[in-house]
Length: 313
Ligand code: HSE
Image 1: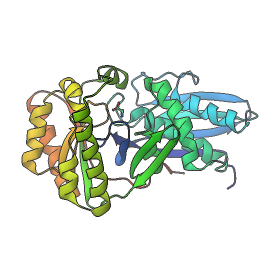
Image 2: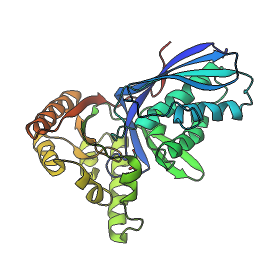
Image 3: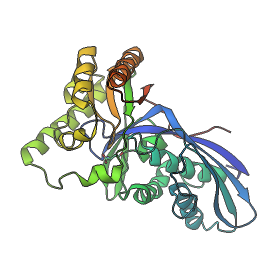
Image 4: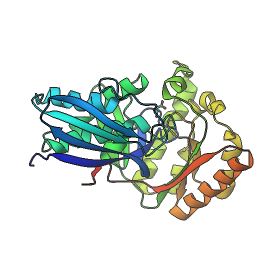
């Protein structure tokens, strides 16, 4: 592919863990997502010229910003430091929300620089750089947001060393409702509260659920998917950081969701449904419930986004 002078890219939000698959399962959403515009300039170096939508939270220093750092990694890797890159980052989603905000920015940057340079690397070859970006943003290089944001669909991280990422089938009617209650839970903090050791009995139950979920995705078995959407390892520790968590679970159960849990490290919660209408209904009910408790929220209803990062222009 030919090199370009400028490019505008979108990378989608993601919901990591898929309830039972801590750090190994994730899926891409239709919306929200982040956008970057990259321009080639004569003066070598990577410069962030503009960030919008971040309420001033993100660093403009390109060595500290995950987008700038990842673009620089690719230039170093390809030995293309002869050129300069100017970056605009347009955040279109809340930060620290459990929607893979840092991952969407990282992927938008990586996908954009690779397209700008004529696609020298495959999508999967970009993933190790994305892990380093996540490490910079939240202290740990987990792949369950960056992989679905880049590749689209539902992804399984079979192994981190070596990195082995697999796209799983997406049942055609599988949809989700994601609610972001307006409280902040940084991923770094939500990881620090987790125990590093687990009881063998609970681990075995979790393996059963993960295997059941993957099997249900292959066989389009919504009942099996529903039975498998349970997390006894991570949720008990993290759910206390999320307002109205138990009440929201009860509401979604009564409304007929397949399953409910924490999206990524929270505070967003995700409900899985069969059909988009059901997802929209649940989004509205949960938003209304939070409003009645004087808690503001954003709500998104989405099919599973199978495209991942895309070029806008
Ligand atoms: N798997 C990660 C976690 C996702 O649960 O901490 C963070 O978005």
